[in-house]
Amino acid sequence: MSLQQKISPTAENHFVGTYLESLALVERLHRLLLDVIKDEFERLGLLEVNAVQALLLFNIGENEVTAGELKSRGYYQGSNVSYNLKKLVEMGYMHHQRCEVDRRSVRVRLTEKGRHVRNVVSDLFDRHAEGLEAQSVVSEDGLKDANGTLQRVERYWTDQIRYIY
Image 1 (tube, helix red, strand yellow):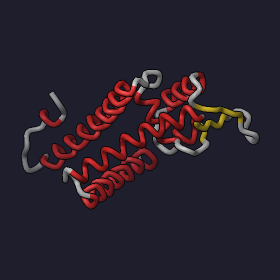
Image 2 (image 1 turned 45 degrees about the horizontal axis):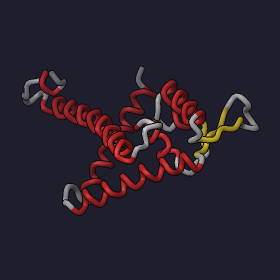
Image 3 (image 1 turned 120 degrees about the vertical axis):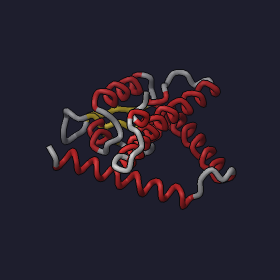
């Protein structure tokens, strides 16, 4: 039984039910995104990296970053990002180098092999964007509205973490 199903729709809790439905949808969409990436990589025979690692390579792009920067930007959890960065370096998808200023910190950037994976994910997302628009699934304005709403929820949650204990 989902969180949404546990609440009967009454005037007092209608907003709560809608909020819980949104939370469940965001969670399902993230899992589905990983499945879509996994499926694309299986079709192409790229089985060495998993969907989480591919998405990590996509998000790093042409930047040179530390694991701490990825965590502070809110993209990834601590142990998850450290493990995946280590594996990607071992498999040759990323270069790593100790920072000159803080020798405890390691900066990473994509290798040519990593850029290839990033491009595969980028091409997949480009095709999806074209398909969503061509099939009138959602308009650009609709996406902008959804993004605005999600950004406001993100700010609210961030404020809850920072200011309410």
